[in-house]
Image 1 (cartoon, helix red, strand yellow):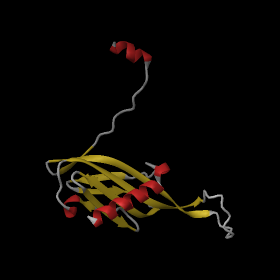
Image 2: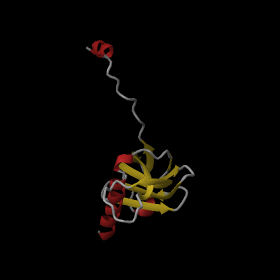
Image 3: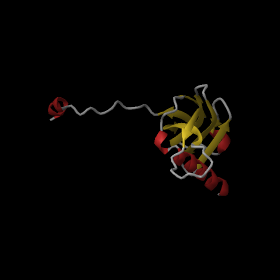
Image 4: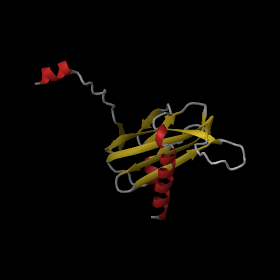
Length: 148
């Protein structure tokens, strides 16, 4: 129970720290069988991949460079259903501090920028099935008339 809570807290902490930066990490997903991995750009480091699923399923992997890989079976029973993932990484670019407080140190850099991406996939019969993205809805008056 403690490890589940700590894993969830770590995921939420990283998610909140990059809340305004969602989906700015350009990483290609590589789902195969029960393995979750990504092709990541070379300019990112300190990556963390977290996956959550049905019945309190949680898995997490970290790497200093390259893609973290999670084999879902290594983390417990894999059940059919919807799973979510979040991949977070640090860049070489420095972030500016948002604090207006002058702490007397003269340094306004807060650290390295964080980028992330997230998404979902389904498990069916013990195999990952990626969710296909839907085309954007276009508000076209003519299309609405045709449907009436």
